Length: 240
Ligand code: UGA
Ligand code: MN
Image (cartoon, rainbow, N blue to C red; front, side, top):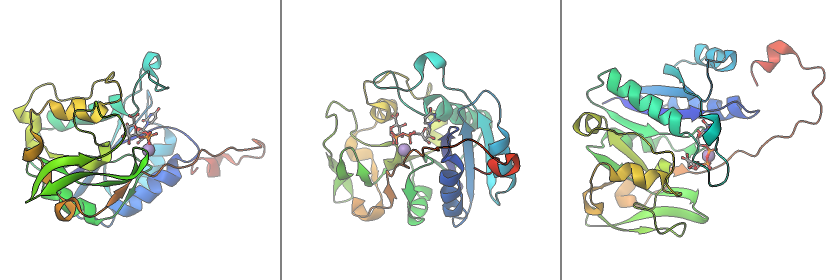
């Protein structure tokens, strides 16, 4: 099966550096379609050039985050409109099988994660490193069933888990209606989304060796502060 990797991305100094790391990872994975959704009104030259320069199957889409809900503090989550745009593309393109995964552009991925994703029949789950204020969050599994979760952050969450910790089979998009991310979830973007599939904890598919391996880390790239804006070469700037 093909893996559809959905990546929201927005303009900033580290954007191409982050996307290049992810591109290099995905180049090591067979049968991948990379859906890049720019947080922008129009496709930017920067990402058009990046896509042109990549030896990967890429679907390049755009969807701007509404200015009124621009992520800040408790106002909302990041990447919502962009992921929803990709879900719309999957539905409209009548993709019938394969798995899809939401891969943020600044995380770190072990390529073994993608083979776990490929075998997801409905919803697969696994641990994520460096997230939720602890060293890792993880489903706790017994006899190949998820029985509990190891986490600290926000216990009101329906499934206390990060975006990087699950993948779904595309057939679920045809089985269920209204599969999209909600903008306001009180910090439970992932749980409110997963709840739509009416799935119980013990119906989730534990991956990564019964949820004992960390194949993805919620790393974050430090914001770069540039001290001087003079002498920028326009051609080189397209690559930054
Ligand atoms: C955490 C989660 O890991 C994200 O999956 C979740 O979307 C986010 O919190 C949230 O709930 O707001 P975090 O590292 O804080 O992630 O978020 P970012 O990595 O900054 O953003 C998540 C994705 O959205 C990235 O791929 C980023 O490029 C994109 N993004 C971010 C936009 O498209 N527009 C923005 O204005 C900001
Ligand atoms: Mn991030």
